[in-house]
Each structure stands twice: as C-alpha cells, then as structure tokens.
Length: 345
Image: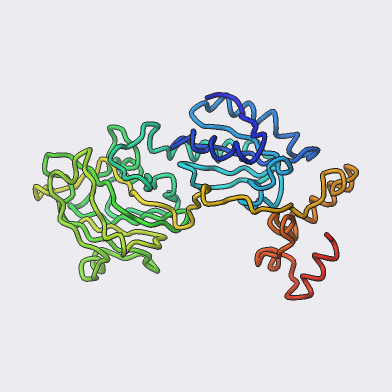
C-alpha cells in the first residue's frame, strides 16, 4: 500500500495497525500549525511511495488525543514504528534523512512479509528487535560471518578454526523468549549440542562456556535444524532477556566446521502493549479546546516548548504528573504539582 493514511479519530487507529499485521507500520504524530511537522510532510509522503512494503499513518494529536496519550507523545513530529501492533522503535524531529535511515533499518530486519504459520498466536519473530551493533560471534569465518544467518537467503554463518561457535545476541529492548529457529545443512555441519546463557554481565570465552552451567542445554536432532524446525525453550526461564549467548559445542557429523543457515528467536517484547486493552474512560477530558489552549501561533509554539520540556499528554488530559515529567523538570513532590497546576489550570 502506497501513500499516507490519515487517521481521522481514535477509533480508526487500532484497525489500521491490525491491518498492517507483520508489515512495518510508521506512524507520524503531528499537530496543526507545527512548523517542523509542515516541513517534513512532503518527505513523509515521498517515503510512503518509496517504501510501499510498509504502512504509513498520520495522527493529529488534537483530533486523536486518546491515541496520543496512550503512546506518550510529548513532542511533534514524533514517528512510532510498529509490527504486529507492537511498538518497536521511535524517531523524533524533522530530519528526513534520519527518518529514512530508521525506516531502512527496520525494513532490512524484516523477517518476511508472509506470515509464519509455525509461530503460535500471540508470539512474533523477534528479528526486528535484534541489535546487530551489540551482537558478537567468536570463531566466525571471515567469508561467512554472523550477519549471514540473520537473512533468509543462500548465505550462512560458518565457524573458522574448529566446529565451535560462541554467539552473543543483544536485543534493543527486554524480550520474552518462547522458542528459536536454528537451521543448518543436512551434510553433518548442522549444529548439535548447544548451551544457552542469558543476560551475562560480560562476554565469555570458550573455556568459560565449557565449564559454566547454562540457562538451558539442548541436543538438536536432524528435524530441529530443518527449515520448518522449531526449538522449544523453557519459557519460564526466559522472561526478561536483554541478551542471549549461544555456545555451539559440536555438529552432527563431527565435521571440521559448523554451519548455521538461519537463526532467530520467537517470543514477545516484555513491554508489549495490547492496545485493545485500552478503553475510553467515561467523562470529559479536562484539556482546553484548541482555540482556548493554543491561542495565537506564537503562543502555540511557546506551549509546545513547555509541553516538550515538562509535560506529557497524560499530564495534560488527566492533570496527573508522571514520574518522567518530574524527573525532566528537576522539581520534586508538591513543588512540582504546584508548578504544573499553576501553569495549566
């Protein structure tokens, strides 16, 4: 789908995210009269046509106050990135080049447009959450490095001096791991004995990996490393994972080197939010109308500056102060309450 879909009201937002499914959804939060929003609008429209494999949505924070509050929008323009209705990243500001780089980053991490029928309902491919800059692989071949096994193509990861590999995978946010895919060839080079460690405070070496007690140890059969293989993990032990270290001890054929053709995890982000759980609270929002609140363009810019520095949309709608706002202001307790209510009531 090419082009930008403008969300007219709060009720339209969730259906559009649902329709995007596993596709990348880029949501622009904007405000009428916001200079930076106006400047980046043509570039955002152009990006929607350049990357039709993604869904592009636009939300006005005054027309969709509930959506803005739910997503903690504190400045405009803000761009949020979603997959399977799960927020995976954000970008702020009117830099079109930076925004495009962020879009390309997530499209490169696309696990595929087709839905994986072997992924249980409620879970997702966590490839978009892998922080490649934080990953490390010891004993990888110069010609066949770690990033090869994150792509579904003919490339592969291969060990160098012997059959062992020590792979550290970092995530961009805490995740819960349900299972993993660790695919390899059927020529004896596929991985067999695996030790898995999580949240190590520092990198380990091969000697330490050999003697340390893992979070889970696995012996993989030939069926496990096939294209449709799913390797179950002990879910209760992988509830708040920032990094995983995978020690590949051996392969199936006692071959000199080990190959991994594809590798990913299945699970959910710890902070995943089910937007269907949010319901409108009966009663009126106690913010002012656009005319009363914004006034002239000069006052609007002033209000936006204060909003970005001190307050969030939750504070504005409910007149309740979040801990984040309190930290940003440098004020504490009743002093901050008095300051905020005095400025906004």
